[in-house]
Image (cartoon, rainbow, N blue to C red):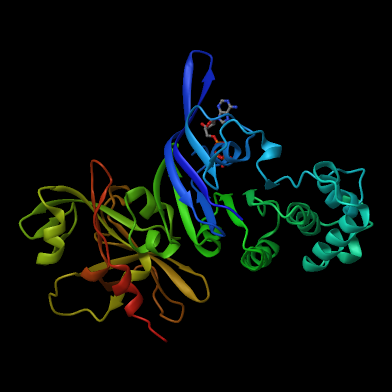
Length: 384
Ligand code: ATP
């Protein structure tokens, strides 16, 4: 097991005359035994970061250390890492057993019976013992992925690097393997860096997540911290489905003034905004409540139901401040509400946007100036 340290790591590619900055000054420390998920949209530099750690890509600037040893110039095979790819990359002419033992035979002097014992043990751990004599072409996608994992595990490396390892599996199998991988990583305690573009994997699997955009690290923290206390508007919008609602607003005294509504704020929120007046108000769909309408209450808005998407357990409801306004102007509020609450298109409802659940961002820099507090969010349901 090992610690990993990325210190101001940059990677540039030359494309003709153009210099592409794939990874831009990224620093992070990964603890011994930690499961770190690196997540972000396509092209954000996730795979390049992983490939530099693996030694498959040179590092343009910065230092990479494994267990306090700088490894920038250490060959991939001498870094004691094992990689699992999306494409499994199994040798088609070899049996499962041979696929799993090949790396050990190449890189160690272990006797054959010891290698056999390790392969059998790992096969048992992954539930693939009956498949050891089959060829990869005789296995399902899920079974092939288990073999690819087994090949990495049997080498007993210091670090696992995984690049979208579940994305070729169907949704149900992916969910199963997600849980299984977490359990395995927990049992083995091997430091793991796991790349994905899937926010569900990011939220559920990692001890921490690192969110990249445009090659730059946006935030690295525990998943719930990133969700409830995003560093900026990008993180806020990337995590959560449906995405957080955003409204351009301007600060005027103790009110946030938008195109179609005004939102009064208390002293605590006001204090976080400082001198910044061009802002974005954010509210997560699940934080919006539909309430009995009536008196003119601050933070409550008469709205018209535009679309209802019933999901069974919950409804996603698209509400409009002004049914005659153009929906492109940001006048739509998305709310997720209980699946048994009956609402239909055209209904008039009252939406409550609770002040303790709002986020406010600097419209120019995207920086979060005010977030709901993670402790407050957690306090709402405490079964301990
Ligand atoms: P995806 O999820 O689509 O795989 P990613 O986040 O893993 O994306 P990378 O593959 O790391 O992104 O690519 C980051 C950027 O670097 C992209 O703009 C990509 O086009 C560029 N890039 C990656 N490899 C090369 C290369 N060998 N030559 C030139 N540009 C490259």
